[in-house]
Image (cartoon, rainbow, N blue to C red; front, side, top):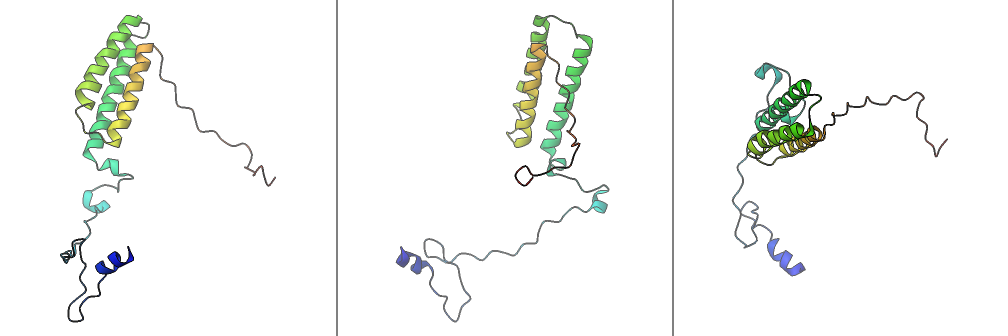
Amino acid sequence: VARALARHRRPPPPSEEAQLLGPDGRPLRPKKESLPPPSKSPTASGGSTPTNASKEDPLAQKVAGVERDFSKAVDAWLAQNSDTTPDARERFADHLTQQYMCSVLDALPSTDAVRSVRRRVAAKIELVAAGVREPAPSPPKKRTAPWHCPACG
């Protein structure tokens, strides 16, 4: 193994620049020096710098819009049909599945943003079909006393 590695680590000839050799022994072409991509400055775009990459990703923006539209449709239906029959809830869940999951979200490429929205939409459709309201997010717990390490005392 050491001899094989030594063959690929030949010292460059003294008259030439050092050349990197590929696995087949031929010299590799030198890479062109490239400049880093221009960064968007807050003044150039007219706004503030985004806090995460999803704000610049058009697919993530589209998926977020689909999720907002879905939530508005579900909230509007639940406001009008709060005490409806299980059959009506099931039909509406089928309608949501067809309209949002099959028609819109399945057509999008599978990225992390799309997968997470698909999971949330599917979970909410299941809640609609079961007749269960989405639980309200719990507020963060506040500590009443400063934290002390149990091992140290």
